[in-house]
Amino acid sequence: MMEAEKLEQVKNEIARAFIGQRQLVEHALITLIAGGHLLVEGVPGLGKTLLVRALAKAIGGDSKRVQFTPDLMPSDITGNIMLDPGTGKFVTRKGPIFTNLFITDEINRAPAKTQAALFEAMQEFQVSFDGESYPLPEPFMVLATENPFEHEGTYPLPDAQKDRFLMKIIAAYPSPDEEKAMVAQVLAGGTGAELSVAAVNTVFESGGFIALKNCAAALRVDPLVIDYAVRLTVATRETPAVQAGAGPRGSLALIRCARARALLQGRGFVLPDDVKALAVPVLAHRLTLSAESELEGISGDRIIDALLAKIEAPRGISGDGGE
Image (cartoon, rainbow, N blue to C red):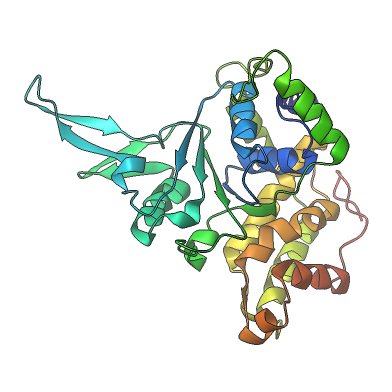
């Protein structure tokens, strides 16, 4: 498929600036193709901002980053109506969220009212203030980061907001070889203090990536694959270790991501393996664990892995719908 070749070019262009972390790159692409948002948990300094900037340039879009802090106000993100001293008229000042890829660094450092300012943008792809609604650019994705170790001065994300993230993944350290290559590349001809995406070329012309998203949305999904995704999601609600399982949005997210993965791999149809591969990052963060599970150190990832081993996937799925 030509779409898969284009996406492979995007990954190769990102690799010019962002070395390693292939799974993170793939999940970011899947999330963007599926029209969702990505929550990344990881320590500072793993290059998440560089990834977003490289991805934005490769698809012909732009990106903006906001460092979330306890004193950040909703209008600092969405914008507001303000008086222009020169003309004496009220003008609309759009905030940094009006971009293609919006990175919210340490999202859990902002208070609830500021986190809530993202709700409408993430769900409705628009921002409202002073009685007017303003559509966000297309494509649009929020990539939010949170530090897994530093909890002082943080505000845990409410379940309703976590559920709005299509996927949550853990950003791991690069391998020693990847880190050596990264250090050599960053220091070549520079101080290493700047994040450069100059080597990244744009793969898609204007509107090209939007057409690719529409192609993913048109991919065929066998009813048996949908049944499998729903059975996995429903099983999270029937697990004793879970206080509250994933809702219907979890089933939808599984299929949306599975279609994007199929496109990424050059297929015109979705396989059960697509659902399996993405079940943990799509479902684990949607679970509310019981107090006993948290005390025992049981994670959402572990619960989803157990369900994948227990629930049988359909066999014989192919592009023609045969079994």
